[in-house]
Length: 151
Image (tube, one colour):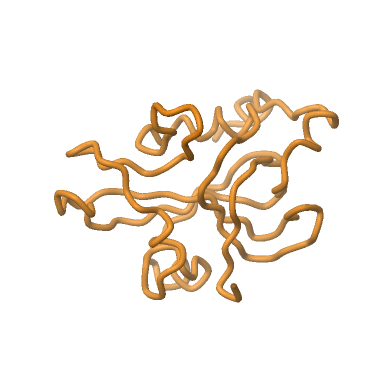
């Protein structure tokens, strides 16, 4: 990514930052290829992986975020690159991965919480070449549920 593109990512003001439970300066979009739960097509699924950050102001290392309910504008702009990761039409829905063939949402909780699934142990999956990692720029702020292998 070019240096002038990095400068375009706005940092939210401190007043808005307090509205988010999860904050990280070291995060990436982790991506893996899995079979769609509905049609069996090979699809890309993604999640946010934080190498370090805070959850409710408590430090935490190596965790993913699932059931994302909201994110700040800077993160939303970066996540727009992955159009298959979006919120359903219902106002109170969470962000989820959608199949690019059949359009059905995937059960993201299983990807994070079941041993052997794509995002259960992201650091090990990255080391094994099973997951790719695209760095997110700046500080990310969001609300959702965190998962780490120690959970």
